[in-house]
Structures are given as C-alpha cells and as structure tokens.
Length: 284
Image 1 (cartoon, rainbow, N blue to C red):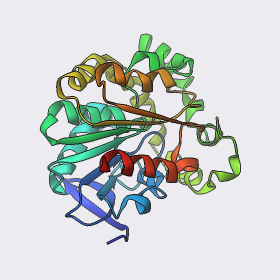
Image 2 (cartoon, rainbow, N blue to C red; image 1 turned 90 degrees about the vertical axis):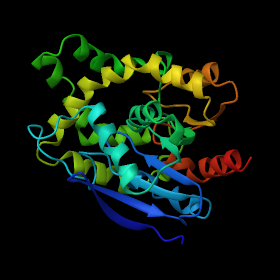
Image 3 (tube, helix red, strand yellow; image 1 turned 45 degrees about the horizontal axis):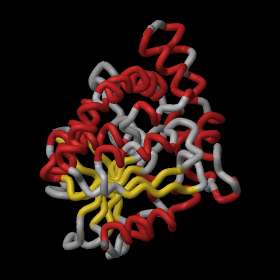
Image 4 (cartoon, helix red, strand yellow; image 1 turned 180 degrees about the vertical axis):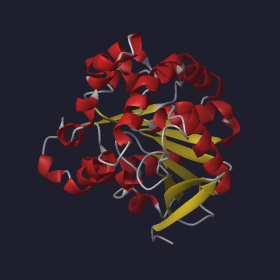
C-alpha cells in the first residue's frame, strides 16, 4: 500500500489530477500545494507518511496536471479554487481528514475548514499564513496592485513568474543549495511557461487580497473549533514570516509550532524532519 498512484477525478466536469498513497483504513490526509508548484512538491513527504495515513495530493485548478481552462471559462479566484477542491474531497471520499496547507493551499484549505468544520480532523500549516504579521515586505508590489489594479502595476508583477524567480523561491534561505533538487524547479518553470499561465497567475495575485480579508474569519474558526494544529515553518521564508506561525498559538493555545532552518519550500531540505514532526504530533 506504499505505492504512489497517479489518478484523475472528474469534479463536476473539472479534471483534477492527484497523487494517492496509503491504506484507506488509515487517517485521511489532504495535501494542498502552493504557488507556483503542484502536487509534485510532496514527492519526498508522501513515502514517509504513507504507512500512517491515506494521502491524496491534488493539483489545484490551473496548476500542474489539473485542468487549466481559459480565463474566459473559469474565473481564477481563491473562492473558485476552494470550491473545486471542496467537491474533490467529496468525490474521492474524504469525509473527515487532516489538511496540510502550504502557501496557496492555506487559503484554499482554510476556506474548506470554515465551511465544513466537522470534516477537519487536524491542520498542518507549512508556511501557510493566516495573520497579517506573517506577511513580509516581499508582498509590497502585490499589495500595490491591490490598491491600484492598473495595467502598469499588473505588468510590474510579471517578474515573479520568470524562471529565475522560481529558482530563487526554492533556494532563498537554504543553507546548502545542493540539497534542493532541480526537478521541482524545472517542473514549475514548465507549467508557468504554458500559454495563458502568466495571466492566470496575475489574476490570482490580484485576488490574494480576498485571503487577507478573510483572515479574521479564519481566526474565528480557529478559536471556535480549536482544531489540532501543527505549524512546520521554514524560518527563512522571504514571504511568510515566523510571527505568522507563532500567531496561531494566539487562537489555538495547544497549537505546536516548529521552525526549521530553511526557506519557503521547506520540504526540499527538511521532508524527513517534517514527516517525523507530523507522525509524532498526530500519534500523540
């Protein structure tokens, strides 16, 4: 049962690609990736958890191997992404699950948790933010676009989509860059180079303000439901700062926060350590 299977689910006509591993009689674990990646970012984590969990890791709409319909056919907002993934969990039979959220996976997973608190058996946040103090100055150009969504401000963000920007996201804050596989960088670069992908991502940059607007609602969910919560954080992340991880304890007193000496894509260098933290936390 430790083999990883590569599947596709028809979610009301939307084709969602996902990885699956582990026995169905184990606790369910939903892995939600971030920008600009896909479910492949969990390639080192899944084998270390598949004996303990039934895992599914979908590619979000517009990412990886999932459908990427034109913007005229699908509005690329975080509300719509969350709606597709919410239905995806129903299609694959994930009625109650632990959710692992990273980057864009956080506003996706937190929306699902707010809508269906009874389905959430726990949350693992790996650099998945829900507090304004977690936002670094690296967000300033995107926040300028929120305040003034002009063509000029939109065009100024295209640099975030360049291959060198993707590589920087993987390697910034990493003590030993030789530990970062080039495979993930190459895949993300390939996906971002597809026709129409840049404008989809720019739409999501603009809509990210909807996530920040929902931070109070996410926090109210944490206080009301007190989910079992583990934060595993690359402390050198240039986008989501350590205070954002610590803030979870303000709303969930029993939340456990672990920092690792690495950057945004913490699984590239610390998959074994993060897997151990997850196993220990949920075994306890």
